[in-house]
Image (tube, rainbow over all chains, first blue to last red):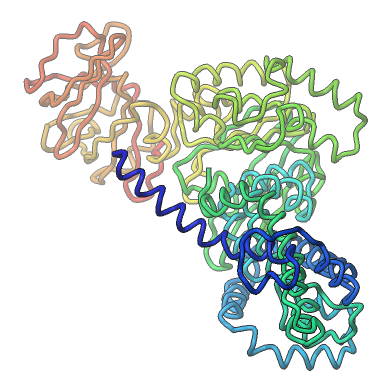
Length: 272
Length: 367
């Protein structure tokens, strides 16, 4: 590639990257600015202050919400990985009547938007008396259709002899899944894990519907209510501080896993 | 080590057609038995049923006189070696070999002893810390065999273990498998589609076709006394030549191939059953090495077949001569110095003491 072409490419990429980074960077800096300076959209405040964060912590139980979010997303991700791989294994490696039908139904549910099932799901939660409990935040998300699909494909890509050998060595199906197959599909686990975690972390609508007790609210729910619900008293700085607080865990997780994530996105569906 | 007995074992996937049709045979203690047949003949299915990886649709499977149809693979006391090795990619060689023993809750010390011993037998001690990825095909296959040995099973099952190796390594491993069998004194059931492997390795060979047993016997019995056209055409390389013709009585009983006038006088042949085929079509079978370029002193009598040479393969130790016969060809194995020219007439002398006759309708041997 000629140098000119390369230069143009790099300039374009830099502009694109900056346009993504800029609002985020501004958000962080603004959350650290005195309230009076935020309106002028300056990049670097005259002095750094944590008053917005202090004020946020005093106004809402943000620590508790962070705990709730970590708990709920953690459970949802962990259990969804286990259950989805079990279903994926059954669909790819076990012979039983109606296997393809079940798989088609699972795929079909992926085409239904969440909004359509929102009301029926809510009614179920009410009937089960799970409203205002962790159960309503976790149980409906313990099976992940995307995860099932990914695991099914990943298991299909592994040789049957690996499973046969494990069976002769004395493994049951569960041990086959988790000690023999799992270590060989790490990229799939990371992909499904990150997507399940992000999906659960970013969920706002569902918690808004089933949780009213502030002590049980997840971070996005609390931040949303705080920002649009009037309790921030129109102070932009405090709202931005809560937004930074909300985004940080996901960004940290992404930085941590990005190598795996990109690798898995590039290699899913390919077998060695 | 143990006896394995299959009683009318059959397998069906759809409940209608059987891929294995009521096969019965016995593997004796310490015997090396090869199941051989073309792909799709059901040999691997039989092996997988013995292993417990496939359900048995009908019949009984007995290991050491105990019915094991409903036992899990791990409870059958067998070990299996797979064509693609099936080593656990995320474990080292040591862990691969120790895994099954760990699941049996064996003590660490005993596991270590067994792994070291098996590794010593197979010459893979330097590989114990490596992962399968960092090894060649031959090394992986050794590890796969090692994983079977450490279990100290009653029966070893081999599913085309050499098919993924290159030709040179395959010959080497064949010899090593023989040595291993001697060393382990184990019952080995070995599946292959390669008749050379079957001939060289087996104490006995079972030939399968379309889920049906075609013949069971020692390699030399199958080679010299094939029960049917399929076995005659499958065992041996190149296989038996088939010459279709009629049994006619002139003064004596003769086999006649019309277009070439090839005539075998049957009065010298001890086969009495052939008399029942007078005026009927039969197929004559003759091995390439029983056809000569000139009559021999110590054998015979010989029947002359005059035809045209259509191709010659000079192998160095021997010469394979392809001669035209109607639209087909027959192959003769001559000494490498034979003076044969392509496209010219060639006289083939068939050792009539070595011919087989087959009934074209049943494809069975006439004897």
